Image 1 (spheres, rainbow, N blue to C red):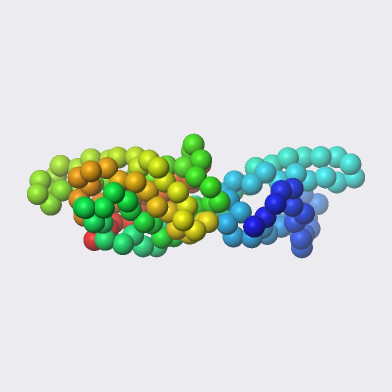
Image 2: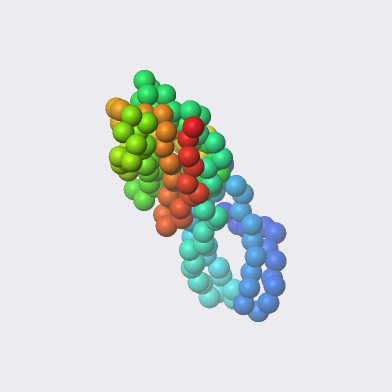
Length: 142
């Protein structure tokens, strides 16, 4: 795990105005970068790619949790970390509802998310993950 502040190496200078530095996966979705050149400091907020959902195991209507496999989830769940499910009813086609899941935690940093689901979720839903203003693909469970 990274500890901050962290020197970024290697650093590539592309132009007089461009510096490229790569941080490790799982460092988060938003990282504050401080650049100091000849004693002059500047601060920037950089972002990694949007979250991606690769797989959500079949929803179990008797379970109260959903597990989401993917990438770019970041290192922690914070106030601006949102997981939404649009639920579909096989019993009542056309009656859909969207809920924001609460009590989410990262079981594995950056790649595995577990969230509490409300009673009566069913087995079919579209799921999206938002981390700050970055929104994942919409994943349809089977």
